[in-house]
Image (cartoon, rainbow, N blue to C red):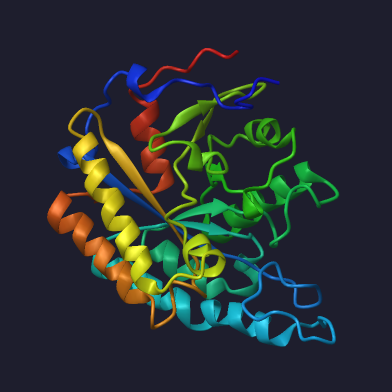
Length: 296
């Protein structure tokens, strides 16, 4: 295994310039909204409150309720904010959302959002019994609920096994966001058959990192995105660039944080003329002008 793993390494300076985005935009935003199903009867995937001194309990009511705020309130605040800016997101969903929270799927599909499988429930691919079955179930459940077969994937917690990418390609998926933190633009991944494209997905402009891990106030999200937009726009004079935003309803969807997203969207559109694209739109834009990279 080479040091860069499944990625096919091409340094940024050696890439031919890409065509502008639709409408001639030099800069694109890719907002990804993650909606998950947490198992009430198991330890929570993430916690805001530490366990009590006597030890954690299951069910973990306060942390489950924290996450539930996103399903009950935060997702609608995100939808309203993005819609005001004419922005459609890629909805990364555990496919069980289609059963547990059908209103979320119905409303976001009606708003033109793209559905991206994120497993069945929030459980990493390294811990499931049958990875192929989970991939196939998540695709089928989303297709049944929306009438449209999804084209890509984001693994829960971005976790993969050595087989994940090959299984995704074998299932007919065309892109994967797990490797998205590696670049400002799409790039080819090495798979056993077919073609798999990595679509930008962020770590640094991810509300999990900014708010839940680094514990910054809301202003940090705007400050970080504004700095990124300035540099990416300057660099886009040579070739277009993408800024991805990872959002979770129980974090950015809270009343004390939503204004930061509103300001980012306004800045991107008004100062930099950025367009907003879903993952499949980015995929099609890239594949149309980029031949497959030679496998190693």
